[in-house]
Image 1 (spheres, rainbow, N blue to C red):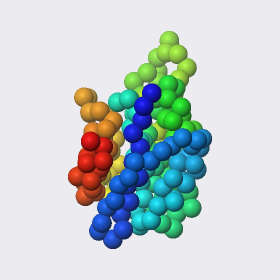
Image 2 (image 1 turned 45 degrees about the horizontal axis):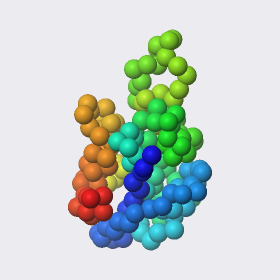
Image 3 (image 1 turned 120 degrees about the vertical axis):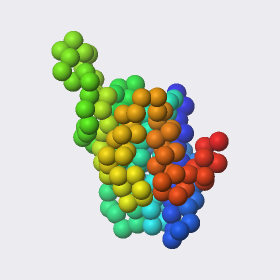
Length: 161
């Protein structure tokens, strides 16, 4: 199971991107430490794994606790890194299997966390949820769309390859 993780930071009007190694991260606080160790007014950790989910972790300058968003809560059942993100988050949106009594116990497939996490960067909560619900949209497409609206799409795309 391979993942891609990038730290994306903005100082003034300049964006910077760098790949991140998440080895040893066992909590949302650990993920927050990855971004907290960088310089910038806006600091994001963007994660995508196996075209199954995307996560955004944000810890801006002056913040004490990281905020997070996970595109698909169900991914926490199969991916330890997604479980780390989902552990402290609450479900938002809807899950088509929520009323299915025959469905096995699992995290809901609805997004989890703070849907307004990048609202000030151009993608409001409704827009982020719409990206997650749009049929055929891959998790990395959600991250690209967020970066495009924020003004760092080219830098993210160059890093992602």
